[in-house]
Amino acid sequence: MSSFWQDLAIAYRPAAVSRRKQIALRLFVVLVLAAMAMIRPGAGFIFPWAAVYLVVQIAEWAALNRFLRKAEPSGLDVSLSLVADCALAAVFGWLSVPVWAAGTPLGAASAVLLLSGAIITVLMGAEGCVAAFIASGGAYVAYLVIAPFAAGDRQDPVMPFFLVGAGLLSLTLGLVFLWSRRTLAAERAARRAAEAQTAAKSAFIAMVSHELRTPINAILTGAESLERDRPDAALIADAGLMMRGLLNDLLDLSKIEAGRMSVEVVDHDLRAVVADAVDFWRKAAEAKGVRLVLKGDEVMPQWVKGDPMRVRQVLNNLLSNAIKFTAEGEVAVGVQVESRDPRVVSIEVRDTGPGLADDQIERLFSPYEQAGVETARAFGGTGLGLAISRDLARLMGGDLCAANAEGGGARFTLRLPAPEGRAPAPEARDEALAVRDDAPLVLVVDDHDINRRALRQLLEAFGARVETAEDALSALALAERHVFDAILMDVRMPGLDGLEATRRLRATPANRATPVIAVTGAVSPEEIAACREAGMTGWVEKPVKARDLYAALFS
Image 1 (cartoon, rainbow, N blue to C red):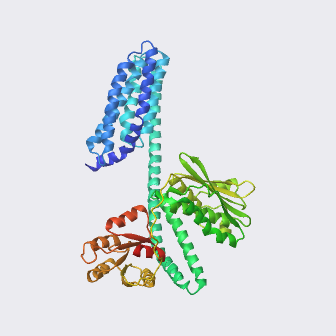
Image 2: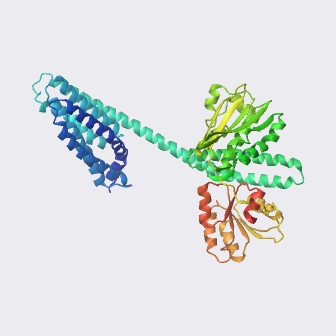
């Protein structure tokens, strides 16, 4: 197809979509006109006209569908659609001739209104496409001139004034079309720029997060080792965990804005999730002299279906904020079942802090915003937590809302569906982080020296023997000479990435059955599925925790 037809097809597609959406409106107008003909003497010509219109409308619908179904429509597809548009306008506009020929001022005015309304509809549906506007609008403008002549009004002394008015109307419509075309072009360019900027921002955040996880991984691994001998090393671990929390907030917001955030539905113990979250924050509350209480846990359903990780994330954010803004008094977590069929659970976090002004409530769930400048200075944070929490709640089929509590303080209510879940079968518990006597041989593949050193330190603490490779090609060469008990494979590496390296590894006889554990900062369901498809048998998230690594290797 020539570039002319390609350009025309691209320009016409929005108009084709718009015209297809207008079919219901046009059929409604025809139905109203047919109903009027039933009660109006001498209007029987509308019935055969409506039948012809219906046939041409079906033809236009078929042409538009043929055009829109194809990713790259041909010149014939574009031509058929434009011809159908023109034919439909010719049939519809014809109605103005007999209406004008009624010979009454009301008939002439009705014909003009009919044509003017049709032209405005064409203007709205052209979506800035000149060909679509001319194909449909040209016929209606022509009828403005033809109708009075066909009705025998050519000798009317008002005719010159009418023709001048019709010309001015056509000129005005042309100018309005050109203005709307420029506006639409500017709007589309701005939309494309915004989409490109969003995509670039998401890619940038993903890249930065991948790089940041390397030093954070080293901080947490080193702190975990130091804590055995020096209790003050917990400060390093807390700083690393804080950095990881901020990083996760940025990643979650990026995924939500890009429409790539997803939640899972698994059986889990909701009582344990809520109780663990409260227990986790109890020490922080006691350090401030604030009571942290859990109410209503006896009525809370236990095994439900949902996403425990995301529920825990929302609760952690709500409890963190409540304790942060409460100088004295208590933070109360209340649970109740709001409805039974379907079952909906509400978890309320209420504090005795300063409460919220109306304008603050409006801004609470907006990304990057906090309750005010003073709040940001006094308490820090990114202002992302509540926005992410509400989005996660809605992704899980629930909602999160805020209000002032009676007697002072703020009240946040998380509502979630809680369908019946199933308790897992009991299983024997492994001895956590036990030192292995059999000294397994593990290969660590990562392009960052810091990551290789951190993983080596963790693995040697388990009693493992460790080989390292700084890229995938070196790892494949080692795999040809040794049979490993396990391979830790970084997913994102320059050149040959971890996915392709695993595929090649599965083709070699020596380590075809060796467990390959993905070490990655990206743990979305799609990314985990890609790892499994490549032949990986498990995964651990960066920054790597010793317990998670042990479970991935030895459970």
